[in-house]
Image (cartoon, rainbow, N blue to C red; front, side):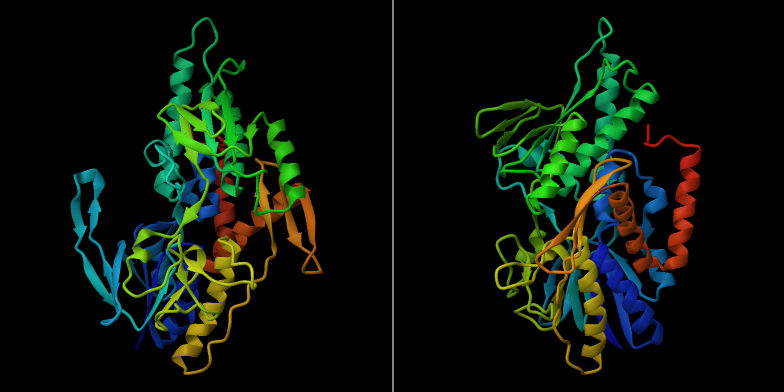
Length: 435
């Protein structure tokens, strides 16, 4: 059978594996294999909610092995270390148990392919800023989001315990990068703070608090969205007590502070870096495969590598033209559209038919600003115009995006069951995790 190997189980990779398994895998027309370094999947746009403890990871994560069994494809755990293009093999590194002194669980091995799809997503880009990689926390994975959540909880407990005379210093938080991740995290931290007050982690009288500073090198927050969305979000964040600094790039990140180009020093018990992305370094090491300056694979309109027709790429790790002047943006909706296209394209490839060309359609963007509101713009009737939305309607639309993702990978019935189970768990539990 034709062997399709998909490396990366993010929004695009998992959806593609599910669709191909349900068609080619179930019919016995192809062997579909998904490779990922982690055993479970959590939708990346929700990692800021994991970091603030407002998302129950046990209720919202998908176990790859079980999902593969139900959807007629295979799962292999491990990190991609390289590709042998001549032999058509993917090199997978050993899986070790870090908590057990690095004991090897699975050895390194090679997986053969006829068609290789790279969907490795993106990693944080530190832009060479001194101290950033060593002192800032990122939100690239579930593991990092959980690490940030524990650091936030520990910092609040420590400040509360050090109270003297009824007052103590606030928990100083610096978020570098005011794109969607940074903005949503800043807003979600206020929900975390309110719950901490309710349960005594922070003092109910307001003597201990979180002081949040959002730093952006550009002239406004949410630079990828319309100015109207940016202005509205800026006002909402200031209403939540978030300090915002724009047009002042970060030049150094220390253990307890952040320095900017203007000479401003921002105190920081915890620094979160959300300022940029690049594709994983392993892609730049692939022999003969063309990548751009941030390691994204250069692909044609069919999402095939410009260097090798047997290699495809989608999502954040693919550099794909949208218009003559713009590239397809690194968004979940782009990965979703590319997964739908590649499902049809790979079936056509196996059957010897023309693959066709991918056409990206921008449906707009939504930004969550806490538990009850959101803001964003939706695609209008005319391609050059968009519709501004905010408030509860925008929040409902934002929540629907995740439901749509769940339905794409698990089906309507599983999505509804997950919704009900999540609601029931919240009945007898705090709104955020307290341990």
